[in-house]
Image (cartoon, rainbow, N blue to C red; front, side, top):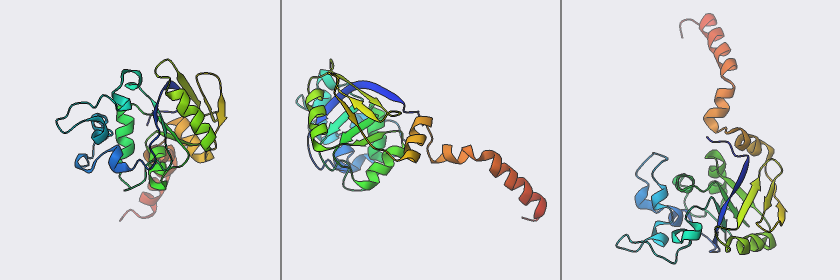
Amino acid sequence: MDKFTTLTGIAAPMPLVNIDTDMIIPKQFLKTIKRSGLGVNLFDELRYDREGNEIPDFVLNQPAWRDAQILVAGDNFGCGSSREHAPWALLDFGIRCVISTSFADIFFNNCFKNGILPITLPQEAVDALMEDARKGANARMTVDLENQTVSSSDGQEFHFDIDPFRKHCLLNGLDDIGLTMEKAPAIDRFETQMAQARPWI
């Protein structure tokens, strides 16, 4: 998993509330267990018409936000089913941070396990960042995980809270496997001791 330290990038405004996981990545794209290749179908039903043509009005189809790395979204982002494909699709598209007033619990947890930083802020802060995101590619936000701040293009700064353990994992690029591998020496010692004490196992 890639480390998350400081991110400066384009933020896309998505003021819709209750964006669920089926909207993030529709069910017909859940046949794969690969984490790559899902970005092209992120928000599929919002991005494309029935013939597969891009819908020009959708924010991520507009030139100013095609390379967005941050989403500023409406309340209750990631609700619906628990599919881990949702953060996979966001990450594959290039989204590393989602900012909202609230998230569905399972989606929130899955983000951390996949290197995405979900930031919860009060409504007034999200409104200010949403307005800043509407400025397009010339207005870049900065997310500083170490100092737990989000800065708008015009210098407004907002502090966010994060669980210290999750912060540690993101800063060091540690998913569940990475956390286990940190304990590799202790695991090896245990396995050696077990092999000596119980060679019949």
